[in-house]
Length: 277
Image (cartoon, rainbow, N blue to C red; front, top):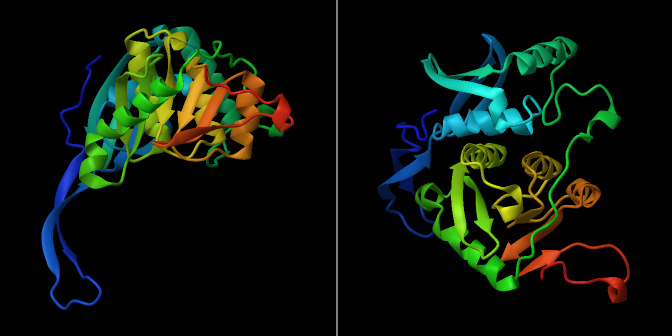
């Protein structure tokens, strides 16, 4: 699979800024992130269309397959081809025969239904995927967290240009950011990251995931699909994200900023302990 895309992640456009209290507009060129439809296809059968930044699409396809439960590991994906089509990009993903047959059976069960966020489930009990299991959370010291957060900000080259994209990164237990991916979609950024980690055979126990976005239920689920035992979010978590992280035994750290981080634990203050070693 190719490791990178030659497509530009940003486009330069003319802009005019009107400032309050002044009569002269400020005219300049600015960068905006590229967003386009990416169609995911298995055996010539469309599965989903995602609005994404058209970079690292092979990693995106691989990560998406894992986090959406289409495959169980990277070996289930035999190849990914990128095709330019009118209005967007098509990802043709070649699945192992057994995974393809399971996917087609699942698709038949999903026919006629559509939705957003949690598509194709039959009832509320199906929201939580019982097969998910994470590794024991790594021992990470506060200085390592601070280092990772600082590196995360410094590594967001596309966001520095556009101020309009999300990032997801993988850091080792010393806080060194080893892989970082950006995208207009927070889920996409995480899928790209997980795809890169799968491709490079990174051990989920060797580090932790850091995301710039809100920490919702889906972000916990996707991280758990990879097997990560620790998730750090710059923004705040939702209640369901906290519940799912606790159920899975995942260490969830949020509102992670330069001056500190926040952990969430049950029980009275006297019974609480810092979750960061």
